[in-house]
Length: 140
Image 1 (cartoon, rainbow, N blue to C red):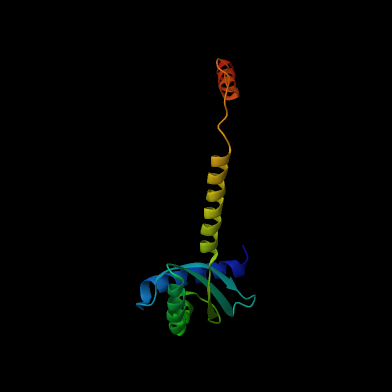
Image 2 (cartoon, rainbow, N blue to C red):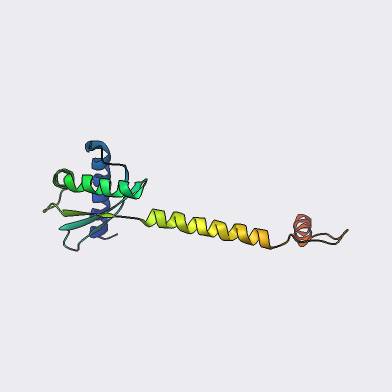
Protein backbone atom coordinates (compact mmCIF):
# COMPACT_ATOMS: atom_id res chain seq x y z
CA UNK A 1 0.00 0.00 0.00
CA UNK A 2 1.54 3.29 -1.09
CA UNK A 3 1.60 6.47 0.94
CA UNK A 4 -1.06 8.00 -1.32
CA UNK A 5 -3.39 5.05 -0.60
CA UNK A 6 -2.79 5.34 3.14
CA UNK A 7 -3.51 9.06 3.15
CA UNK A 8 -6.61 8.53 1.00
CA UNK A 9 -7.92 5.93 3.46
CA UNK A 10 -7.22 8.23 6.42
CA UNK A 11 -9.02 11.12 4.68
CA UNK A 12 -11.97 8.81 3.89
CA UNK A 13 -12.29 7.72 7.52
CA UNK A 14 -11.97 11.23 8.92
CA UNK A 15 -14.34 12.77 6.36
CA UNK A 16 -16.91 10.09 7.14
CA UNK A 17 -16.64 10.72 10.89
CA UNK A 18 -16.84 14.48 10.44
CA UNK A 19 -19.90 14.29 8.17
CA UNK A 20 -21.75 11.94 10.52
CA UNK A 21 -20.73 13.41 13.87
CA UNK A 22 -19.95 17.11 13.39
CA UNK A 23 -22.27 18.35 10.65
CA UNK A 24 -25.79 19.16 11.77
CA UNK A 25 -27.16 20.39 8.42
CA UNK A 26 -30.76 19.22 7.85
CA UNK A 27 -30.07 18.91 4.11
CA UNK A 28 -27.74 15.99 4.75
CA UNK A 29 -29.35 12.67 4.02
CA UNK A 30 -27.99 9.24 4.85
CA UNK A 31 -24.48 9.88 3.48
CA UNK A 32 -21.77 7.28 2.92
CA UNK A 33 -18.26 8.25 1.89
CA UNK A 34 -17.47 5.53 -0.64
CA UNK A 35 -13.91 6.37 -1.66
CA UNK A 36 -11.26 9.07 -1.82
CA UNK A 37 -8.82 9.71 -4.64
CA UNK A 38 -5.73 11.73 -3.78
CA UNK A 39 -3.55 13.65 -6.22
CA UNK A 40 0.07 12.40 -6.34
CA UNK A 41 1.23 15.50 -4.45
CA UNK A 42 -1.53 15.01 -1.80
CA UNK A 43 -2.88 18.53 -2.36
CA UNK A 44 -6.26 17.55 -3.82
CA UNK A 45 -8.70 15.02 -2.39
CA UNK A 46 -11.67 13.88 -4.47
CA UNK A 47 -14.23 12.56 -2.01
CA UNK A 48 -16.96 10.37 -3.50
CA UNK A 49 -20.18 10.04 -1.55
CA UNK A 50 -23.40 8.09 -1.90
CA UNK A 51 -26.81 9.00 -0.54
CA UNK A 52 -29.66 6.65 0.25
CA UNK A 53 -32.83 8.10 -1.18
CA UNK A 54 -34.19 10.01 -4.14
CA UNK A 55 -32.14 11.92 -6.74
CA UNK A 56 -33.20 15.21 -5.10
CA UNK A 57 -31.46 14.03 -1.93
CA UNK A 58 -28.16 13.89 -3.85
CA UNK A 59 -28.46 17.56 -4.79
CA UNK A 60 -29.40 18.65 -1.27
CA UNK A 61 -26.56 16.64 0.24
CA UNK A 62 -24.07 17.99 -2.31
CA UNK A 63 -25.15 21.56 -1.49
CA UNK A 64 -24.77 20.88 2.25
CA UNK A 65 -21.32 19.33 1.81
CA UNK A 66 -20.17 22.18 -0.43
CA UNK A 67 -21.31 24.74 2.12
CA UNK A 68 -19.36 22.95 4.89
CA UNK A 69 -16.28 22.42 2.71
CA UNK A 70 -14.00 24.80 4.63
CA UNK A 71 -15.04 23.37 8.00
CA UNK A 72 -14.45 19.78 6.83
CA UNK A 73 -11.06 20.73 5.37
CA UNK A 74 -10.03 22.42 8.63
CA UNK A 75 -11.01 19.39 10.75
CA UNK A 76 -9.23 16.97 8.41
CA UNK A 77 -6.10 19.16 8.59
CA UNK A 78 -6.24 19.06 12.40
CA UNK A 79 -6.71 15.30 12.57
CA UNK A 80 -4.25 14.17 9.87
CA UNK A 81 -0.67 15.32 10.17
CA UNK A 82 0.15 16.54 6.65
CA UNK A 83 2.28 19.44 5.49
CA UNK A 84 -0.65 20.89 3.50
CA UNK A 85 -4.36 20.47 4.06
CA UNK A 86 -5.71 18.90 0.86
CA UNK A 87 -8.22 20.84 -1.19
CA UNK A 88 -11.47 18.86 -1.07
CA UNK A 89 -13.83 18.28 -3.97
CA UNK A 90 -17.04 16.29 -3.47
CA UNK A 91 -18.37 13.99 -6.19
CA UNK A 92 -21.58 11.99 -6.30
CA UNK A 93 -21.10 8.23 -6.51
CA UNK A 94 -23.98 6.38 -8.19
CA UNK A 95 -22.24 3.00 -8.30
CA UNK A 96 -24.48 1.50 -5.60
CA UNK A 97 -27.61 2.41 -7.56
CA UNK A 98 -26.01 0.94 -10.67
CA UNK A 99 -25.23 -2.35 -8.90
CA UNK A 100 -28.79 -2.58 -7.55
CA UNK A 101 -30.12 -2.09 -11.09
CA UNK A 102 -27.81 -4.83 -12.42
CA UNK A 103 -29.01 -7.20 -9.69
CA UNK A 104 -32.66 -6.48 -10.58
CA UNK A 105 -31.98 -7.26 -14.24
CA UNK A 106 -30.19 -10.51 -13.33
CA UNK A 107 -33.07 -11.56 -11.06
CA UNK A 108 -35.58 -10.87 -13.84
CA UNK A 109 -33.55 -12.95 -16.30
CA UNK A 110 -33.39 -15.79 -13.78
CA UNK A 111 -37.17 -15.67 -13.27
CA UNK A 112 -37.80 -15.65 -17.03
CA UNK A 113 -35.50 -18.65 -17.53
CA UNK A 114 -37.22 -20.55 -14.71
CA UNK A 115 -40.62 -19.98 -16.35
CA UNK A 116 -39.46 -21.01 -19.84
CA UNK A 117 -37.57 -24.20 -19.01
CA UNK A 118 -39.78 -27.17 -18.12
CA UNK A 119 -38.80 -29.28 -15.12
CA UNK A 120 -36.73 -32.37 -15.88
CA UNK A 121 -38.73 -35.59 -15.98
CA UNK A 122 -37.18 -38.87 -14.97
CA UNK A 123 -38.42 -42.27 -15.99
CA UNK A 124 -40.20 -44.22 -13.36
CA UNK A 125 -37.95 -46.46 -11.32
CA UNK A 126 -34.71 -44.81 -12.50
CA UNK A 127 -32.59 -42.85 -10.13
CA UNK A 128 -31.22 -39.43 -10.92
CA UNK A 129 -27.51 -38.83 -11.45
CA UNK A 130 -27.31 -36.80 -8.22
CA UNK A 131 -28.62 -39.76 -6.20
CA UNK A 132 -26.07 -42.10 -7.78
CA UNK A 133 -23.24 -39.67 -7.01
CA UNK A 134 -24.33 -39.33 -3.39
CA UNK A 135 -24.51 -43.10 -2.91
CA UNK A 136 -21.11 -43.66 -4.52
CA UNK A 137 -19.53 -41.16 -2.12
CA UNK A 138 -20.98 -42.98 0.88
CA UNK A 139 -19.38 -46.26 -0.13
CA UNK A 140 -15.88 -44.79 -0.23
